[in-house]
Amino acid sequence: MKFVRYILPAILLLFVLSGGFVFAQGLGDPCVGGECDSGLTCSTSNECLAELPEGPQSAGQVLQVIERIGSWVFAFFLAISIIFLIWGAFEFVTGTGDPQKVSAAKQRLIYAVIGISLALLANAVPAVLRSIII
Image (tube, rainbow, N blue to C red; front, side, top):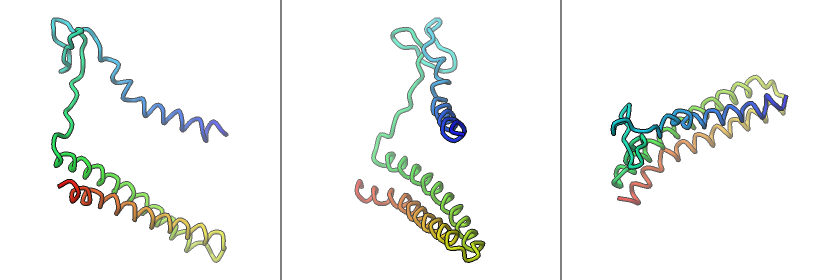
Protein backbone atom coordinates (compact mmCIF):
# COMPACT_ATOMS: atom_id res chain seq x y z
CA MET A 1 0.00 0.00 0.00
CA LYS A 2 2.90 2.35 0.73
CA PHE A 3 4.23 1.68 -2.76
CA VAL A 4 1.04 2.89 -4.39
CA ARG A 5 0.61 5.85 -2.07
CA TYR A 6 4.15 7.22 -1.79
CA ILE A 7 6.68 5.55 -4.05
CA LEU A 8 4.71 5.37 -7.30
CA PRO A 9 3.86 9.12 -7.35
CA ALA A 10 7.49 9.92 -6.55
CA ILE A 11 8.65 7.76 -9.46
CA LEU A 12 6.13 9.39 -11.79
CA LEU A 13 7.21 12.86 -10.66
CA LEU A 14 10.87 12.07 -11.28
CA PHE A 15 9.99 10.62 -14.70
CA VAL A 16 8.10 13.76 -15.68
CA LEU A 17 10.79 16.11 -14.35
CA SER A 18 13.57 14.22 -16.12
CA GLY A 19 11.79 14.35 -19.48
CA GLY A 20 13.84 17.31 -20.66
CA PHE A 21 17.09 15.47 -20.00
CA VAL A 22 15.97 12.44 -21.98
CA PHE A 23 15.36 14.53 -25.08
CA ALA A 24 18.65 16.43 -24.67
CA GLN A 25 20.81 13.31 -24.92
CA GLY A 26 21.36 13.77 -28.64
CA LEU A 27 23.24 17.00 -28.02
CA GLY A 28 27.01 16.89 -27.95
CA ASP A 29 27.35 14.77 -31.08
CA PRO A 30 30.39 15.62 -33.18
CA CYS A 31 29.94 18.05 -36.04
CA VAL A 32 30.21 16.58 -39.51
CA GLY A 33 31.81 18.92 -42.00
CA GLY A 34 31.34 21.91 -39.70
CA GLU A 35 27.55 21.49 -39.67
CA CYS A 36 25.04 19.82 -37.37
CA ASP A 37 21.69 18.26 -38.05
CA SER A 38 18.37 19.89 -37.15
CA GLY A 39 19.53 23.48 -36.79
CA LEU A 40 22.12 22.99 -34.05
CA THR A 41 25.33 24.99 -34.05
CA CYS A 42 28.92 23.74 -33.86
CA SER A 43 31.00 24.79 -30.87
CA THR A 44 34.74 25.44 -30.81
CA SER A 45 35.28 21.90 -29.48
CA ASN A 46 33.51 20.51 -32.58
CA GLU A 47 30.32 19.38 -30.77
CA CYS A 48 26.73 20.14 -31.72
CA LEU A 49 25.05 22.56 -29.33
CA ALA A 50 21.52 23.89 -29.21
CA GLU A 51 21.10 27.63 -29.53
CA LEU A 52 19.71 29.09 -26.35
CA PRO A 53 16.98 31.68 -26.77
CA GLU A 54 17.71 35.15 -25.52
CA GLY A 55 15.96 36.28 -22.37
CA PRO A 56 14.00 39.47 -21.92
CA GLN A 57 16.10 42.52 -22.76
CA SER A 58 13.96 45.32 -21.30
CA ALA A 59 11.69 46.00 -18.35
CA GLY A 60 8.66 45.77 -20.63
CA GLN A 61 9.63 42.29 -21.76
CA VAL A 62 10.18 41.20 -18.14
CA LEU A 63 6.71 42.48 -17.30
CA GLN A 64 5.25 40.53 -20.22
CA VAL A 65 6.82 37.33 -18.89
CA ILE A 66 5.50 38.06 -15.40
CA GLU A 67 2.04 38.76 -16.83
CA ARG A 68 2.06 35.41 -18.65
CA ILE A 69 3.11 33.57 -15.51
CA GLY A 70 0.50 35.48 -13.48
CA SER A 71 -2.25 34.59 -15.91
CA TRP A 72 -1.33 30.88 -15.73
CA VAL A 73 -1.25 30.97 -11.93
CA PHE A 74 -4.57 32.84 -11.92
CA ALA A 75 -6.21 30.24 -14.15
CA PHE A 76 -4.78 27.33 -12.14
CA PHE A 77 -5.85 28.66 -8.73
CA LEU A 78 -9.25 29.71 -10.05
CA ALA A 79 -9.92 26.27 -11.55
CA ILE A 80 -8.89 24.45 -8.37
CA SER A 81 -10.91 26.89 -6.26
CA ILE A 82 -14.03 26.34 -8.33
CA ILE A 83 -13.63 22.59 -7.91
CA PHE A 84 -13.31 23.01 -4.13
CA LEU A 85 -16.26 25.40 -4.10
CA ILE A 86 -18.52 22.94 -5.89
CA TRP A 87 -17.25 20.03 -3.79
CA GLY A 88 -17.77 21.94 -0.52
CA ALA A 89 -21.24 23.13 -1.54
CA PHE A 90 -22.23 19.59 -2.52
CA GLU A 91 -20.99 18.21 0.82
CA PHE A 92 -22.72 21.03 2.70
CA VAL A 93 -26.05 20.28 1.03
CA THR A 94 -25.75 16.51 1.38
CA GLY A 95 -24.34 16.66 4.94
CA THR A 96 -27.85 16.06 6.39
CA GLY A 97 -26.98 17.86 9.62
CA ASP A 98 -24.01 15.63 10.49
CA PRO A 99 -21.58 17.97 12.31
CA GLN A 100 -18.46 16.31 10.87
CA LYS A 101 -19.67 16.52 7.27
CA VAL A 102 -20.82 20.11 7.70
CA SER A 103 -17.48 21.03 9.29
CA ALA A 104 -15.54 19.39 6.45
CA ALA A 105 -17.73 21.21 3.91
CA LYS A 106 -17.09 24.54 5.64
CA GLN A 107 -13.34 23.88 5.55
CA ARG A 108 -13.49 23.19 1.80
CA LEU A 109 -15.47 26.37 1.25
CA ILE A 110 -12.88 28.33 3.25
CA TYR A 111 -10.11 26.76 1.15
CA ALA A 112 -12.00 27.75 -1.99
CA VAL A 113 -12.23 31.37 -0.82
CA ILE A 114 -8.50 31.36 0.00
CA GLY A 115 -7.76 29.95 -3.46
CA ILE A 116 -9.85 32.62 -5.14
CA SER A 117 -8.03 35.26 -3.09
CA LEU A 118 -4.66 33.86 -4.19
CA ALA A 119 -5.84 33.83 -7.80
CA LEU A 120 -6.84 37.48 -7.60
CA LEU A 121 -3.53 38.28 -5.93
CA ALA A 122 -1.63 36.52 -8.73
CA ASN A 123 -3.60 38.57 -11.22
CA ALA A 124 -2.71 41.81 -9.38
CA VAL A 125 1.05 41.20 -9.04
CA PRO A 126 1.93 42.35 -12.60
CA ALA A 127 0.07 45.63 -12.12
CA VAL A 128 1.90 46.30 -8.84
CA LEU A 129 5.27 45.46 -10.42
CA ARG A 130 4.47 47.68 -13.41
CA SER A 131 3.83 50.64 -11.10
CA ILE A 132 7.11 49.98 -9.26
CA ILE A 133 9.32 49.38 -12.31
CA ILE A 134 7.95 51.99 -14.71
